[in-house]
Image 1 (cartoon, one colour):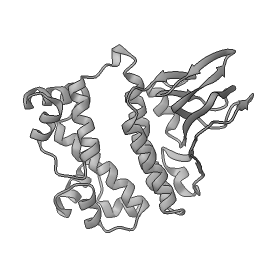
Image 2: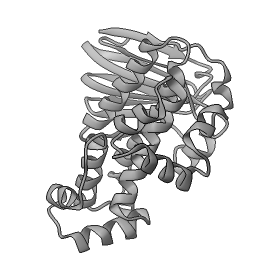
Image 3: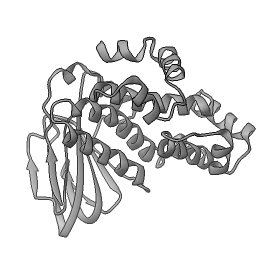
Length: 268
């Protein structure tokens, strides 16, 4: 499989983070970039294996392994076998450098990702958004890009024991991420995490500084923002699609967390 999405970039450049391009290649070509690439890149392998050459060192890149390559950093990579399935995402925006710096991504890095199911899910949502609307799809894709970067950071943080996160917390977070469009209760989250309500609330407060249902609400609002910018769906349709029980409740929470109504956000 091969595709490369180069969305039409217009006022997205005013966003803190937006998508420059993304793609997938079933057998990655031999790439030589003595001057580097003009944007930061995130690449990850799902099948086969290849080799990265950077700073004079060769690094083996097997499945479920990612590469972060800063902008303008010389590098080279090539397949070691007939199949080397590579996915890539190229972000930009006035806030991307600060965001990557906060994630500790300032130099080239190779890291194991573990389970990439959620990362793949977000990757497909970006691709589908661009293909569904060639003019405005990149607004929605750029919203998903933020999710992609957060998920990427979560996966690479698992390698650092100082950044380790409770498995129970991650099970609850994953349940919200996969099911935000459906009703979610504390019983659902406790069942997914395998812990009591009191313990789950403690995990969320100590790690994310918020309650479980607050995280669920913010996750839904994040999806709603992408829909507001990337589609012409009504506020009622969006509130239903992202899992809020009513339009009025959606608008109330949106204003609480974003400081404006959904309509004002769309028209800003």
